[in-house]
Length: 116
Image (tube, rainbow, N blue to C red; front, side, top):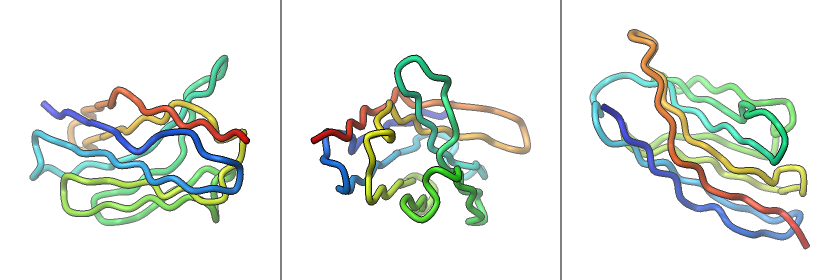
């Protein structure tokens, strides 16, 4: 069983930066693809960025060049968000997928609000 705990959300002005963290516990020796997703009010949850066990990354077009996903060891995954825009306001969720078994886990989410 895998548990994911996000932190780092908050209120920031347009143009500002935030760094989200996701700590994974359980099955730390298994290979997981980690990802960040977000859900704004009244909208579907959408992919923000993913990073495989080998370090390959994928980004949504809306965040390319502004957000960077990274991972440090098997436990910690980060999302550095720069040049934030009001449309980035959403609840951000950490996700872990184990490709070999299709196990899929979600964190509880952290609120990011971009407003002046």
